[in-house]
Length: 260
Image (tube, rainbow, N blue to C red; front, side):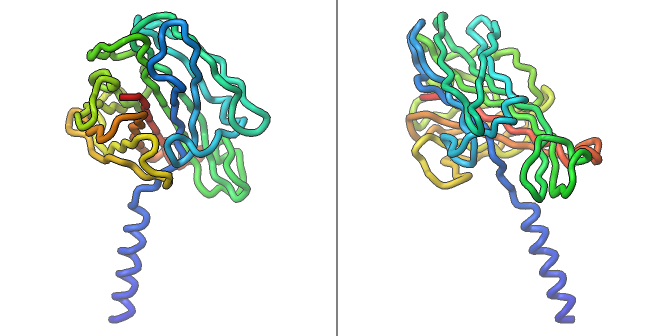
């Protein structure tokens, strides 16, 4: 009887561990200046890791599946070249915004990410040996830049990525203590789940956030901006991959940054 109780207790503990949220590395886009004047040069930074701002750099091969573009206030998209360094990270990304208004800097990544006994590989698991876990990963990271602009409204940009966070108002105009409503969508439909937010300088610990909430039936989450500064909002979603020979799961990550 005592042995059976121990087995049951072990199973309960194992289930609790397996069901606990596990945070993966995530990308984020931050700006040297979130409020430049038209024609003023600024720098785009690609963050990577478990902290905000990013505490690491992407490996060179990750850039093969990385796209960076800017959507201007009129919805016109412009591709931005990203030149990787020899092993990790990228060369400085300098940019000038010519139009006044809200610009959206968008980084997207779509690739297989497979953990093996020899490290991570960007291939499906049926092309590798000694696989531990494999996923098809899709990431959308945004930064909202106000160029000589103080408008409250925010026109939703046509991005069409499967999983994304959309601010309902211009986040730069939300003051300390006020609520920022965001909408999270999966395949264009409202998503239910947890949303995490933090600001630069809040903590130097990994996967530590200043504010946590969840979306409602309409996919809306309200985040209280408890401080002024550069903010990150983040959401994750996963479910089993359709072809188990290639990967174990779909893994979606969405982040957005802004300065209030």
